[in-house]
Length: 402
Ligand SMILES: [Zn+2]
Image (tube, rainbow, N blue to C red; front, side, top):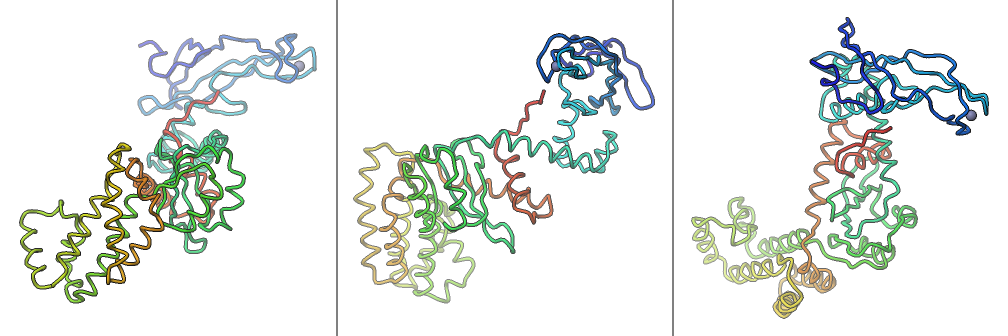
């Protein structure tokens, strides 16, 4: 079998022969380019001073570590009298492994293999695994740091730690990526970050739940953005108020778990055998059936998405009718919901024209919680942020450094 078939070839490095040793497989290699301009003064006036033997870990093949042995010329610059080594493609200066090898370790560790495991398979110290891992995380975040704000932004809060409380997540909803996480959820906490955020006037749409604080922040710091309410959050709020109203109508029934499951379900998700059960219950409690139907109608309206301009316009009169009914309702909880609807009317109506919602953000929050748990929690928010951006902020593929 030709030697160059069991490892990924490196451009610029030629394999001359292979041998099996105690430490694994050794590939004797040669550099294609044995001369290079001076890295200090860029002069071409160089001469070969000597040769240095370099041993590099490069890959794992069949459970064996593949080492590259190279004779690397050491050059002398006549211009600035500086000594330097000819660079090896795919190897960063002063490293004893190729970037491909380090990247493999990163991916395996990320995939769940422990430091202990990798230290035996890859012949490195456990601390080295951690160091390489951190190195790639920092490198990736550095690469991503120049990005400007996404056009469609999702804002939501999530719990960070008991000591430091909540954090705000900014999500690129178009690409399903975390844009950033910032500690705190009040304007005072976010002010400094938002003021220094590049390209925030580029943001066109911000999706968020019905939070006054976030609304005030968005109006102030994203002047060109349209606020769109988050569909799931609106439905959740409606459900909450509806269940409260039910409690005033029938405090005993509200405690029944079976009924609760039926009542909070969308009517179109009920199983055929569940419908008569609910009908029977409605006969016992006067007035409940009307409220239930009203809520189902309103839910149907609120769940509409991706409508064209014309259809969205047609939806406004029934929406306004429901809004009015809520406001004039004798029930306190419906009245409260009506007030929320009125105050958030525009962001809610805009939901119909869009498909994006913070469902994406919730999904990312789940992923973030898994990352946090795998690390047994983070005490330091800075480390947490690095990890989150490196793992949820890009497509998962690192380019090999050169
Ligand atoms: Zn020089």
